[in-house]
Length: 70
Ligand SMILES: [Zn+2]
Image (cartoon, rainbow, N blue to C red):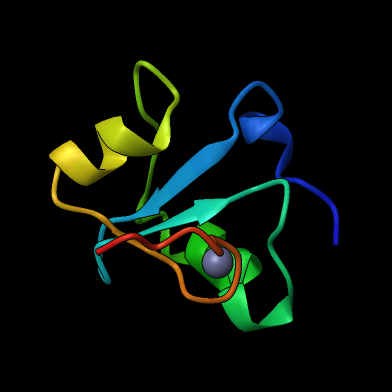
């Protein structure tokens, strides 16, 4: 699937409703990124890294973030 245009510069995309973070290099249909964009519940991170997302309380999406060390 295509990357949301406003997130072209980002790899990690947070879902504020579900407190999940997606890896935009790996997202697939189960991630429902289109739905997330419609809900406008997305977040980006600075720095754009997984540990920063974790620090903010986001859990890795099981569909697109294979390295869940928790
Ligand atoms: Zn995902």
